Image (spheres, rainbow, N blue to C red):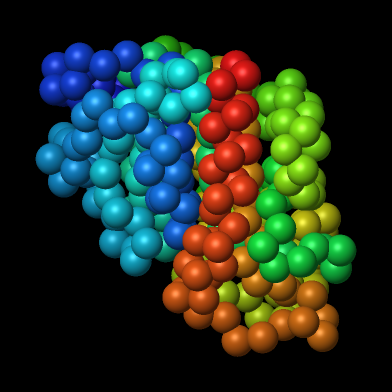
Length: 269
């Protein structure tokens, strides 16, 4: 795997001659953040060696290089999911590559279902911890050049970035929640009993991504900031039929607030 990571990073560097300092992973319906980037280069996933290809509607499948908040960034406009049939190592492969491209921080976004009864549709939730119910991406032979065999996960989400984001949100008048993100395999949306279970074990929101990418980033000592847009509610009395199209619609409506927050946060680094 190490050789593949290095080969892919070398290919991208040769193609772009660009040195990103911040990595961005844009989730379902959240690819519009790219419109705020002064784009210098764009590579389709299917042209990048060893890269999977996005198969989910709302994930465009491009690696974007440019300037956001005065910083050099590389953005994944569309991520990969375990439920698409990829191995968990393939899902997290781009994070490994971004590390070798030189990123110093990783920002991750997603659309998720809220199970905290205090949440409302359209809320932004800053993730301060997670429950990973997807398989762990570090299973298998450890490569010391990438990170330790047993990485500590007590600070998977960077506390300084969270503090700074809360200050920025307060200054801009953006309502934010904080909470624990529960990562499941999908691709089904949850049953009422599953929503109840996720709340009982300590979740505030549930989705089908993010935790594996965060684990890999933390394995490589990359500080992470992650945020969810609450697109539906798994709260008793508020559960309705959910579709992917509805999730995309709600995410797009709330995206402007998230984009402003992330842009300001990157600028403050």
